[in-house]
Length: 406
Image (cartoon, rainbow, N blue to C red; front, side, top):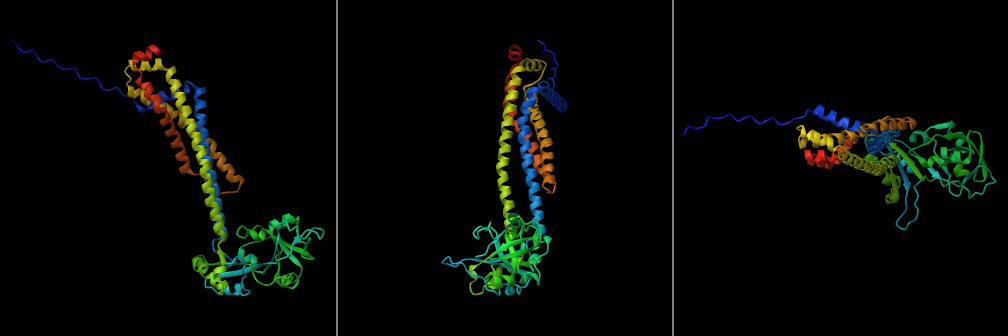
């Protein structure tokens, strides 16, 4: 019996493939085919990305502005003030504190103010002395503004001539509360009238000066019962020596009781404000993430409904050779296109808001490009995650079942 001749085995057909451009084009057409539903779905994603971009952008602009302010004001200003002893009694700085602090190596300038107790400043003598309006009366040295880096908004600061007479300089907040707008007006301080010779511009590093009425050291001692002891010493040193000077300030300002002296750096308060704002922004980022999650749920819902409506299309594509992987990839990319479009829309809305906020508040127009990229990636990732279940569900449909249901 002769052997059968060898018959060639026909080659297996090549696996069906779909090009990436075709896949994207097909997915985009699925989104365009239902514009109303697509717009409603991507709005949730757009709102979430807008919130993320706005929070990051506004935060970046505010931080840049605050850092610029700190840099401009300087971080080399230190303050010395008396604290309390172990029994809770308020202590005092010696009269020689300013001179002693000025001898520390690295100190560039030093000045002081002293609280004038039991005195108040009022607009007229008809107002009760107890109505202080939160305005303190401070005796001041003449070199206060150069040390603090302050400026006079109008008028002049105290001089050697005016410091010994009833003349007063008002901080920015004090002038507003008293209703004084121009130098030359009179205010009732203590038991006599004082002439306003100057109004100060705001002092971010010394807000206590903004709420004070400043009089000369000599007139405070002679007429207002001032003891001559400083209550706050301001010291400015070189940047390189701030740490060393800070370690010596307490023992130098009050050698007998250094443990009762409080030393602080005003710029630390601004830095703490920066940290607080950064922490507070986490709340808004969380709200943006929630909005993004809600948008992802909307995308998933849209895709599920789309599969129910397009079962005939899915069955026809499967009958023509599309594999489960093709169907799964189509609906995954469709979900990514839908959410990615929402991310682009959210970015287009968020960036102008950030720039407008910076311009209105006179802040550096800083855009967090990394944050914008993260927002877009989060939008696309949300769409992919939201499309996993609908894509898997579409891929499980057999051609005959899909055609029958469609």
